[in-house]
Length: 133
Image 1 (cartoon, rainbow, N blue to C red):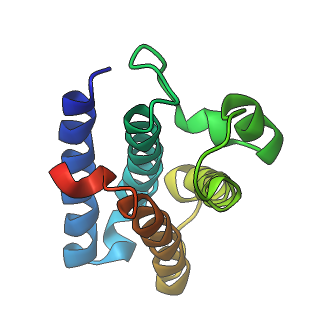
Image 2 (cartoon, rainbow, N blue to C red; image 1 turned 135 degrees about the vertical axis):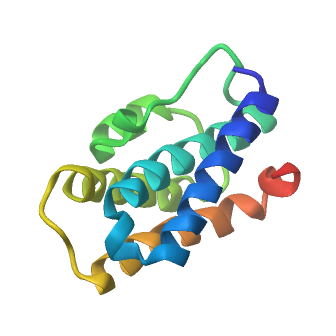
């Protein structure tokens, strides 16, 4: 997928995340779970495209980060902050299904999930990936 398409998708997810914050995380738990997961994956994918480490034909999926082992197999090359990024993606994916398909969670758990995403976003922003968003 072209970077421009990723940027559109990232914008959409960021809007949905912002709406969840505005309306109250507890009211939008599922939206938060879905959009944080997909947006995290897409911003890392854009970073890897821009670094020339991943071709535009290669698409990352949130399920690529269901475990550390699977994530390291998927991202078998080196890049800045690799271990930290993988750990964040795996933790986001682990919590995604709980938020999307599980019982309602407390606000502090939802805020913690959002903090994981913001930490990942801050790392990726250092690479200039989100300049277009």
